[in-house]
Length: 332
Image (cartoon, rainbow, N blue to C red; front, side, top):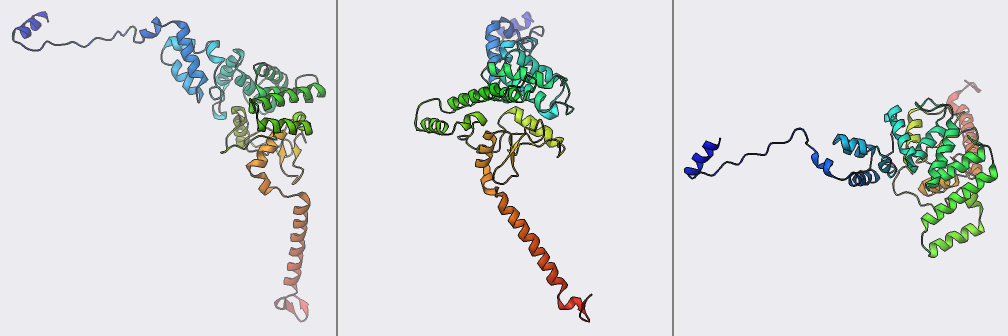
């Protein structure tokens, strides 16, 4: 090869440039020279901004080192709600194990999703759910609430008020609900202004809003979207497996998906008596989403039903007494 180069150089030809041979033994050697803390920070940024679990898993499949570091608590703790959102069609023991690892790392959204699955789907045949459903759900809600998850704090108050997995204490459950609603109010109005003053004035004149489920100032979503991946999981689960009508009813808010844990748990709409809601927040959002246009007071639709029934009887009597239906003075 060296002789060929010398001959080409003597003839005035351009020397050949050989392509660099790849090192098959270390195709991704650059990751090995990077500090581990830097790689963990990169993976944490990927998990916190992921739109679906596949975003994190795709990064973990790049090489063995990323696959090992991707399951570190520093990465799983900051994973976004979308990153830990598991669809019903993909639920399996492996998905349950992944959510458990995220929850053990301190991920509030993962603990909230697991708690919702255990308290709302207990006994419905979902895999990897043990017999300690309500008790495990209360523990998971407590973990998520300790990390600042407002929804988990409200569901923890629900468990305490109704004695699901913990001793029943309505007063303590009410305090937890009030605290969750205060935190929600602070998050919605972080700075002082007319809107925050109006909200505080309303709460001062109607403290029942804080104790029953804050939602008086909840804005209706511009498009039909789930409030949380846990709500989407419930909606998809019961869409594929409708509950028995006499055993369990769903919240009338289309984006909630919560079922009753006992009969007559949800409260009816005081106007129409048809819609049922798990909380005041769902009722307020559904009202702004269009229930106000379809809500008809009970006495009105009862009168309308009676009028329709009476009109049907009159029409039947007139049809029977028509001349074409009479022979010899007697109805045929």
